[in-house]
Length: 248
Image (cartoon, rainbow, N blue to C red; front, side):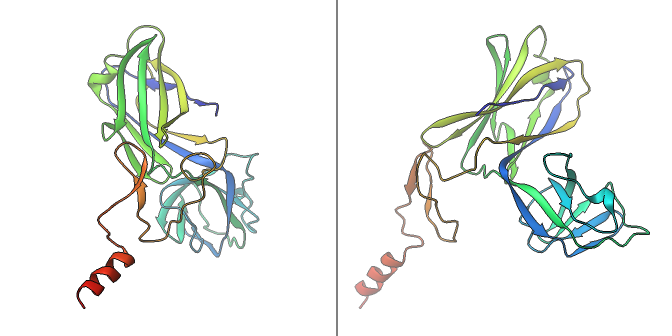
């Protein structure tokens, strides 16, 4: 896929933090059962999100400025409240009685099976890298936070400072999701970037069957990012049966 281009503004010698959201191209649609409050709260039964996320709203009556059309208008930034409620802080229903409508969003990419790596360069020279637990944290489905220390940003001097953000999957497969320049002298702040992938997320590897997300599925990634099944037989109905037979 073609990596998203996003330049970063960083002030050398100060810390920098941002959020990256990675989402799939297809849309999810959920019926809205309630719109009320100041700030505005959407009630959407089992909406499927577990964090703050960009959303669109379509078909609401009585509050036209809440409606935003996917692919034509920018989304609202929704704040996660719980599994049935989302807040849109910039809007209020005071004096209004909005009804109906549907919530629309792009499905987050599951990053639990990926190892993120952000590399920062001066020309062709690697200055430093951020990895999971070392400057990068997985916040929730589709959401990574990045943190550069003051000591790291102090290295960002000279021409042609740029970075890449890769995700390493089993196989191994390395996919570049983001790249850009690091602009010196900007105001360090908590920025948020949204990346839309070129295709839908499937099971690890190419041409493989989809893997169930049901409880007790023991298929997982090992330390070498290859798939394996633990040999501790926990939980394992067959082993339980054999142990019971041995006790007879």
